[in-house]
View 1 (cartoon, rainbow, N blue to C red):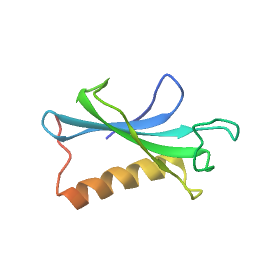
View 2: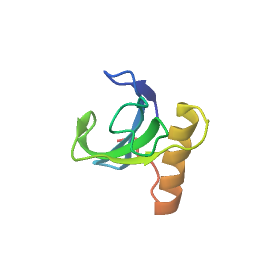
View 3: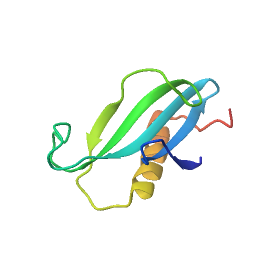
View 4: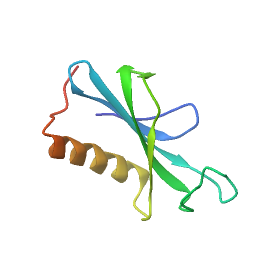
Length: 93
């Protein structure tokens, strides 16, 4: 798993849960006056499926972040937790 930055400067990770089954998670930063800052936390973890590496395949789900953990730590903990809970082991796909 390699952390990267997207065109908006958001830190993200993309991985294959199984061959051909890709996910992307990223941290989006909002401002206090942004109407999408619905929880007032200014940081949100987004998750979406991908049709292929780099090809987002749907609408993302967002989770407000209520702690001060670094973006990198949140992303890595999220991916490992989701894979442990679902029983999926990241694929080298």
